[in-house]
Length: 110
Image 1 (cartoon, helix red, strand yellow):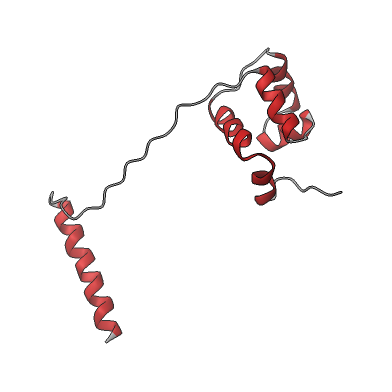
Image 2 (spheres, rainbow, N blue to C red; image 1 turned 180 degrees about the horizontal axis):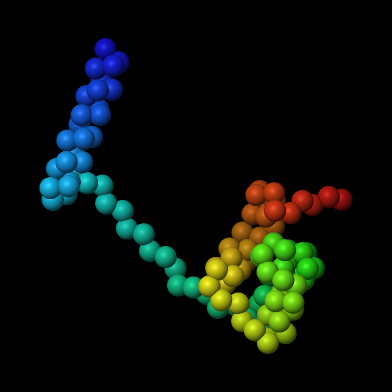
C-alpha cells in the first residue's frame, strides 16, 4: 500500500514537471527573492563592529579572511572594503558574537 502511494506521488510530480516544461505554470510554486542593496561601511563603523566583537585587528582580519594590514587600512580610512567584505560586515554588525560563536568561528573562555 505504501509503495503504491510513493509511486503515485512520484508520477504526480513527474506529470507536473512535464506540464511545467511544456509551459503550464498553473500548479508551479513561485517564490520571489529580493536581495538587499550592498551596504557601505567606512573606517569608524568598521572599527566599532570590531570593538563590539571584542576582537583585535589581527583576530578580526582572521575572521574576515583578510590580512591585518587590510583591516588597519579600512579603519584608518585608506581603503574601503568591497563586495563580500561589506556584506560580511553587515552580517557581523547584526549577528555579532552569537553568530561567530554558533558557527564556532570564535570561542569565548573566561
